[in-house]
Image (cartoon, rainbow, N blue to C red; front, side, top):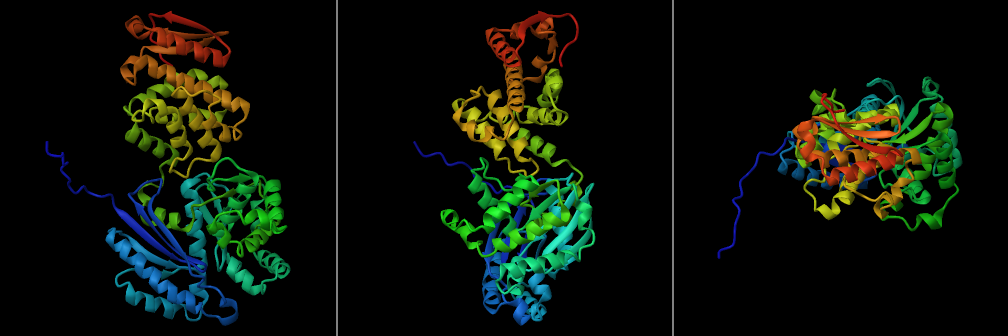
Length: 507
């Protein structure tokens, strides 16, 4: 028998876009695929060039960095062209705009990138792109965005989807180190003096402080390791001011032995992080924020939203991700809306914010349909926990992941759920369990078919959990339904009742 050879045809690719971010410390290229409210990165690579090293003393870009940049950008250009990226451009930031030879460097670079736009952006533009990147994943962000690079610190206010008050300071980690001549005590004084020039910082009092930039991310990652934080996702890592102060104090105290056990990428950042920690410490004193939130989305995602995905900017990113995941993994695009209504009996048990999460959970509820039955609970859990969308905070990820695991019959004490359970309180665990069991019951009744779920409904009557159904639905009320109804009632500390009704029911 001849081997089967499937016919392979070229499929139309989603549009791609690329940005090379020519920074003071590192140069990175990101290639995005599609036009989506949740940017999808298909290529992301950086090279540490330290273009801004020595700029304070010489006024010029670092010679070795410029030489390396040419090779790196040539490679990036070849990849971007091969992937058919358009729009595709290069943006240079603080080091290039401040160096006396910055314009000449860009002119030389342009000779090797014919037809590719290369822009030296202002500090204000850089701040606006960074803030737009934060708003990309946190559309209700309200407070101050601080983006630290190698050459500069950008500060800007965000409120109701808008940005204002952009300010740029020469407090990037390389620039600050050069200005302070490697002296941390001197660096503290420089930071204190520079931040005093930002008249509006105190306006951020009692609001969030959003931290963007590689040195801030590295600081967060080190502290997450130190505290054994159960989720290895920096984006949306949130600390109280007291915990953030504890983080800064811990790092500046020099935990050298502990840090040496961390990854090579983190170790490369060790000389930068003290300066980021000093900036953060003073920022918190000036701003007095309500919380500190780390964002891995910044300038590059801001560019994407402004240049590529502006047509979908008004969409709600969590909802869009839920729709996309349902379309990709689920069996029905009609059932989730019916499930949202059907599970409305849980509303009395919910916090206001959890009602929206329940509706999202309905869209994710069939996410394991294509997985092996023995692994649906665990795979569904991990799929939700590690969602590619950055618009879910850590609490939401864990809560939704637990809901999906319970929907697929996971034991509440399953080992794969233990590390992250600590991010939820006991009441939230109970709510997630009840919602997951409710969805499991619904799928047992209807087999994933919207029509069969209609004509059934659940009500809480005193201490009884009542499953109502029309006479036409009696055929689906088998033993498995009764068993899962009992499990749900047990979780809610209620008794079971199954009743036929002549009236319309269903949520």
